Image 1 (spheres, protein in one colour):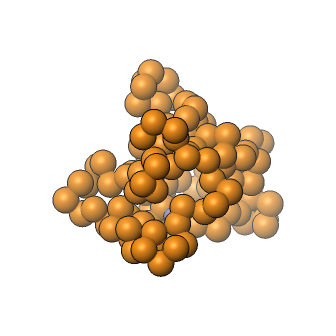
Image 2 (cartoon, protein in one colour):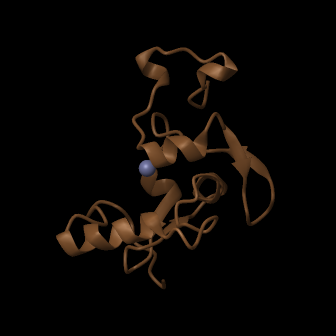
Length: 118
Ligand SMILES: [Zn+2]
């Protein structure tokens, strides 16, 4: 199995099938295991934090405010989880939180890649 299978799709609640997620991401993911890549409209698997490397699929803009999907999986995951408040731009909640984290020196994580011309 290449992805974390939700219980609603007959996945188990074994530790190997679970991933820690914040309420926001968990709610937006729902039981999705695939999503549309906004660049190609192809349906692809969303990011699996258990099996895939974050830095191979995502990077931050230079100001650390926006997450960029760098692969079909990264782009589809960003869209599905609304990682940059694109779906509800008036809410601006995750971007506001990232600004606070940046001011506190907590974000972006130093090990995360930064998109060079962003
Ligand atoms: Zn989250």
